[in-house]
Length: 155
Image (cartoon, rainbow, N blue to C red; front, side):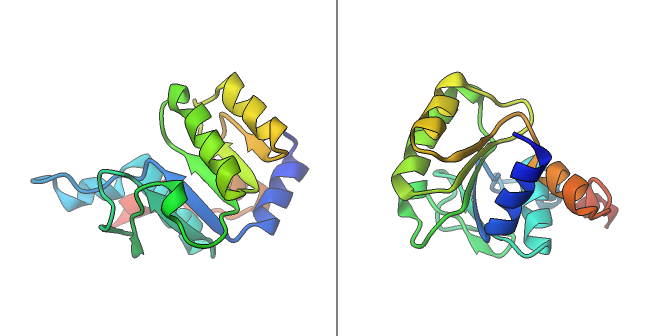
């Protein structure tokens, strides 16, 4: 996927379903939540105008970064442009199938995540597919948004 293709995904998108956003564990310091990669990325994309819906079956109904956590992609009402995945590579084909079912326009596998079967599902359904790239870093690079890499750690 070229930079121009990725830029078009960003420009045509408003809503991101983010799979793997972390919820607070009992007894955990709430500051730890702000330091988790998916939560950092979620907040960053929100800061630049995207609606980000957190997906976490173990935290459904909780609030993270002002958004109510949803159990699964199928439980989201309304269109989803990008399905952004922060889960192990082996889980991605199932998420790709769910993304196809809900009519997502793009599947994005975060840095270090890739899977041939997920890629094939995206191709079969003509869904834009990005793997092994951080959505936040790509946004920063393409739109020259020079915030610190981990802005939530500055507090």
